[in-house]
Amino acid sequence: MRLAPYKIAWLQISHQKLRLLAAVLGVSFAVVLVFVQLGFQQALYDSSVRWHTALGYDLALISPKTTYIVNPPGFPRNRLYQALGFPGVESVTPVYIGIGNWRNPDDPVKVRNIYVMGFDPSAAGFRLAGDPNQVQKLRLPDRVLFDRFSRAEFGAVARQFEAGEPVSTEINDRDVTVVGLFELGTSFGIDGSIITSDLNFRRIFPDRQPSRIELGLIHLQPGADLQATREQISSTIPGDVRVLTRDEFVQHEVDYWSNSTPIGYVFGLGVAMGLAVGVIVVYQILFSDVQDHLREYATLKAMGYSNFFLSRVVLNEAVMLALIGFVPGILLSLLVYAQATEATNLPVEMTVERAVLVMVLTIVMCAGSGLLALRKLRSADPAEVF
Image (cartoon, rainbow, N blue to C red; front, side):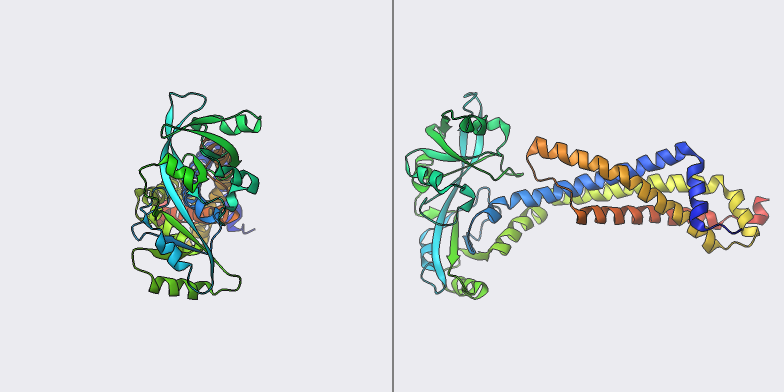
């Protein structure tokens, strides 16, 4: 009875349990490494555009020198008000951005940089701030809203506020009071954030010119043509500002982290290294398997089995190792993702698309190893072996 290639392949890889275990562990390690690199890379991109997606706007106005949103250069505020005069524009919101020194209210000795965004509480665009009543509290002097998902190093602000305890601290050596919470999260460049009014922003940063802003939000009238309005504004106002749609603003930030910093390269290199490790491990296992069973393969050749048939056996072994090793690999990756999310507050999440991608890469990786091992199989000459 002629056995199918996959049955022979399973008998081969399952014959020596320790070798099978070593192969599965090697494949799983490569899978985890690839998942971790891809997960953190996507978390970098997703977290870096949290502000871009949370703010309410149709078009954004930034300085041409802006690289990323953490600490962008300013531009004249009147450029934003010039945009207000174009057809289709309903309102504009000037936004002030700065990095302040936050004193931990639980341990005043500890001071950390915190991301500060200021705006007019009566303006549109800050839907992320939540309850309009707490936004209106920012009209009072030295009042701020705190991001509940900021890192723990900033103090137990959210817990104390929700418990009804007053929360006061210092920013840039100025006393402030937390009057509300909002939900955003951290990124690779931002560990914690607060929102305040434009007037309170100037109190926190007294040396900043009120006529310069870091970001302008443009809200269009219902039914207005987004691209036509953007092109009209961009072609008319001076070139010391750029006009971007929401998608363009998001992509601008992603491009910075991907192309202008070594982080994108490092993550890509990590994926390549993970696949290289898997190729080496699986190749060694399959090569040893072919070497150990060279007599059996030569016997099959003498019985009339072709090189193509025997190649299918080895490739079936490779695919089986890929699928078996992928299962513990993805389970371990889910555990790593959960631990990383809890420790960093970054959005390290498993997606179906990423799981499918890594599974395909794993199969390709193992199949490539199998193709390398086939060189030894082709040398199995019955006349020489016997």
